[in-house]
Length: 179
Image (cartoon, rainbow, N blue to C red; front, top):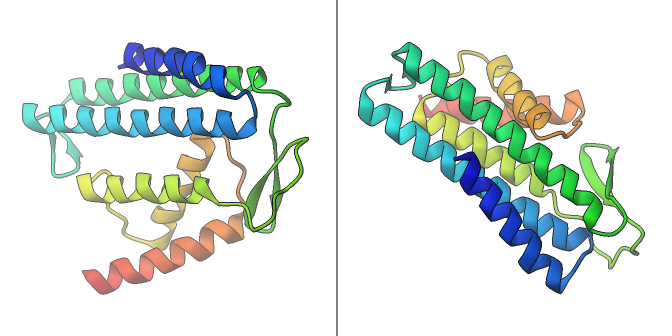
């Protein structure tokens, strides 16, 4: 899994780097890697489910626990590698928290419009997958907040407590209604 991520990263660096070396090009490369990591995680969950090591969101074996730990290390290594490449793409992007939105700050001027909160989309996709495969079975709103905080921490985003709590509350209310 790590090798396939490294191949994607290296090819992306070669191909995207030939076209552009700015913050937007880096964002495309990072997004591709994040999508690939999500795909790999889904594949791992399928393998664990088919092997009987992972059933209805409950890890059934030590092997499944070890597989999840190793995958966490793979994810961390790939994210570290992409962040190292950030400096190959012009001025490094700095992230600053403005209210509950993280805005990328670069040397280029803003072309207008509100910056997209792609980090929120990626987080919601990850939470949806966790709910779907049963890795997240919240008993309280705090469980959802914790899962959101864990995702942001794993992906090197600093998000305010209020922004997370407000969004977790919306999901928790919908989740309770659906049960």
